[in-house]
Length: 242
Length: 257
Image 1 (cartoon, rainbow over the protein chains, first blue to last red):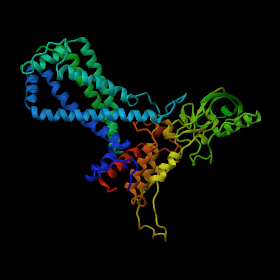
Image 2 (image 1 turned 90 degrees about the vertical axis):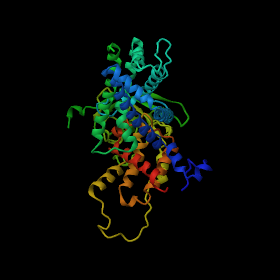
Image 3 (image 1 turned 180 degrees about the vertical axis):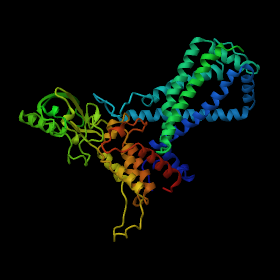
Image 4 (image 1 turned 30 degrees about the vertical axis):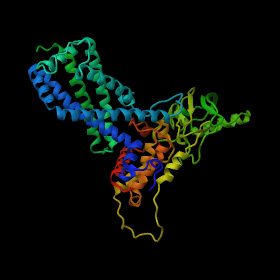
């Protein structure tokens, strides 16, 4: 079979028989498939990240011990971070690429446009790109604050300091502007997930009359748990005593 | 039947007028009086055109054929809704009793890059034909009919195929989608044939080619907002899009195509 979209690519791709792979990645459905898979894997990271951070409520000692134990596995951590970066870059790149395609597909707006979806309010599904952009900005800020420790106004303890994980977290969150930005960041993340989680299953093709209602419910619950979980840290942790 | 609506309607129509594919378009206002509530929407446009012709003006070009909701030829945006306010109804099956005396009705053509405007409310939907030509068929060697019951199709499978086959290719899904995505149309065609034994021979080839054709026509991507499903006069469901995604991923990963 010849395929007009991939005919121009030749050479190495054909030798290793990966033409199908590039055809998949360049197709609309393949791109949404990758967005769905990367989105769900990033959801997995959120679970691990929230579980670890909730140790803040257990006090400084358990949280510090957890953080140091995690960072002692630096080889594994490096692999995990590289994987997360790859997932994130793929998800964001495809979001931009597909959104550009979507905008170009519609020439001219209607003078009048009304939904026919019964009872529809403009929901998270209309704002995935906007909410995703907010989450991206928040993640970059969060990495600057607490992964790389580059905030000029925060007095960081050295990473080797046994007290560093807890104290550095509290130092960042003690800034009221930081707290507000972090709060907005995690709430918008929740809104993004409230559509994204269930929609990912649809994009992957896993829509089944038996399971979809449950998947949609789990998606909403997951969004609330993630948003409330992280928001509780933002709101409560700065006031915690040691 | 609500006889309170039996009085004739006086309407203000705002209709998209565009002389040709590259000409600039704009909404023009036409008052129209004495419209019977028993008329169909297209009959109302016929009356308007009779008035326009009598006045020596250019009539409004709009697509229509069977006028019984099965050909998929008619289809315009009515007050911002594909095929108007009713669900599961084509423009030709919409009746004027759905409107009230004094209403203003905005009528626009489908807007999508893949559906260029030909004139006024008429758009060129041959992009759909090219998608069908790429794989929306089964190749069958004709001959004697096989014995009955040699090929069993369970009732629920046959029902799924039949419901997908109900797509009339009107383009309301593309018109109502904020991304001008044709996923609901392509998914209906792919699901229809993938669910039947006759479609198995070309199952993988079909979905790969039809999606490639869909992408080549520059339709947008699905963002799962469900506007297409709500606008579809043939009640094609979003589950077909999930099946299309599944068929495409399966064909990409596991078939030899």
